[in-house]
Length: 388
Image 1 (tube, rainbow, N blue to C red):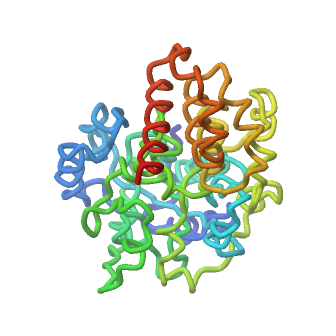
Image 2: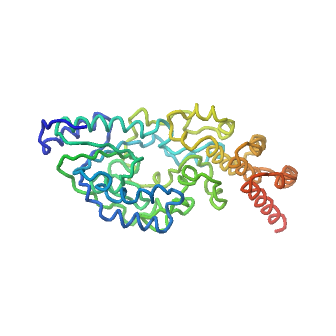
Image 3: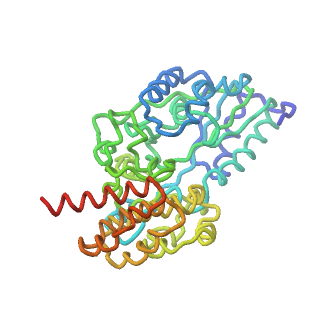
């Protein structure tokens, strides 16, 4: 979009701040597209180490992601905006309620992409109308390195958990950006205030941080329950506990959160039915019911099969024998992904004699190799335990 300039760029800042606040953004800051020179090297190192797992799109978009000007050569300024989504309760409390499913705070209501993008477009249009030039908006889905840009703009710093941390809002911020051809006055970058703190690193259930400021997504519960399309590796299943979509542990552990106010945007405040849903209830969802429950939610994008896979891991960790009948039903589900997870859940919930009787003949009759592997591994664990 383009418009004739009516306001000099240097007088725009109070207007941008005012409009951003009106639109529900908690903070706004401006930087240049060339202020993240280290991003290329750091991203290349992560890709070389394989820390991106199966997220091949990170490799495919490397050149555009590593330098904002590669994405849009005409960009002169980057307006970074943050929206607060801090919960009104400690998201770690639900982890002790083994019969309940823990959904990451960001996914307990509307998809933040939908909430933020329209507002970014509105603000971008007003910037273009006042200062002229072209504008483009991005919210996470484009190859834009929002966190390094937000740090360069002064919204916060990338903490040891690799997420943005703000002295005012802690770790609970959604980011969006407006690229523009207008030369705007820039803000000073933020400096690192983590100090010697290791709270986010030490709380991680799966040791996903090989070093401070480095994340191995292959070990991250958010990756395992959302991006990972196959069976969840056995080594991580017990540690996942009842987390069925994402993980908030490293965010919730950050001491800077004590300064943050709870989110005020109604579309980002958790729905009551997604704060602590019963695992037993969610296990009953078929595909239409899943789609209905999670309409407009980020959870919907992983699909019913992956969602039930995650629930079955939580069921296996619950110790709740009342879940056995439903897990038995799901052991015959059309999806091999679901059947395999059901085998694991049953191996954890059933006693040795009952599991052996249920397993009889099923391993040999299973048509999918990955599910046969689940049966073989579960039976081998049983034999090893009995012989110990």
